[in-house]
Length: 413
Image (cartoon, rainbow, N blue to C red; front, top):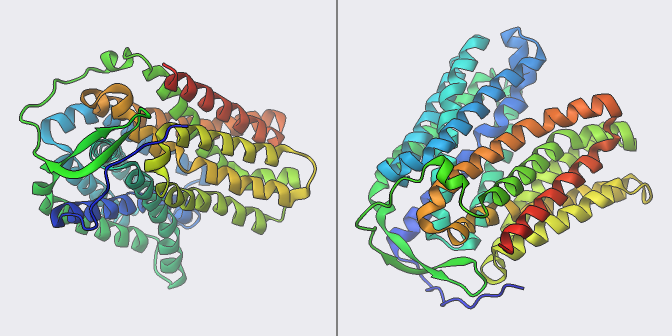
């Protein structure tokens, strides 16, 4: 086990550091807000826009394409403009996109506004994750990603509340757009705080954590790391494959769990939908809990333990005995196991590959994540059409094993 002895944290953080940390926490909540809106509102949106229900896929593909492009470009942008400015401008782009969605009266307008949405989301994701990985302790990375889950859980309630009040679906996008716009102003106002870096303290475990003494921003910028150079760094293919596998696992579980339990396990649709939501809730709660032990246990153990626990959940889903309740509990355990993997992979990047390479590699990791979460669900849908949805736990099991093997090979590099 990788254990760490850290210098004690002060009882009261410096005011400027605490203010910046609060803004970053709010930013992560805000990042999650748009992600669930289209899924929650699409049954009404497609009817009002008079398009087939499958057309939601066109919008999500455009968004995913934008996130991949901006993730790969984030290293160059962040080195030139800084994480704070890239974050502020990117959130501003998503705010404009949400307000654009709110004003859209036709499907082509949704597709048009999906472009700045995807470009803004990918850039801010990569820039903000790298900044936190460099300057904050592992517990904050877990809690911040839990805040993302909180935002993603809130947005369906915003859509539901507006529709229940007799308001059009556009109103939900207007509310989220206003929230994002307010955050944009707050981020621009906070730009002077982003240069107050925090000292990294390497741990015996090979993980990294941060002490609470601020240090001035570096006097020079490290050179740009080209994409092909980053890909040739030893261990990068391992981490990209592990990240791909995890995000493919998460997206497939979220989108197909309910269908599997209804069609193959005979679970009532309402109960299956509730437990599918419990998987996401398990990720959010698990990240809050992981934050309390992350600094002590270390990123490597969190990744390993997360994949193993997710695998146990998948085995419980697949086992034919114990009834549907046993399998449903397995889905919740899979969610709890999934919780620390994403934050820990991101947080360990500066330690694994060097601070000078972390922004480039995290940008590629974000692109790998979006590819996995975009391609895996339709791939499973195609396979299920041919063989049946009974392959759901087998599909998840392959992804868990792939992620665990690649992360272990990286740890032993």
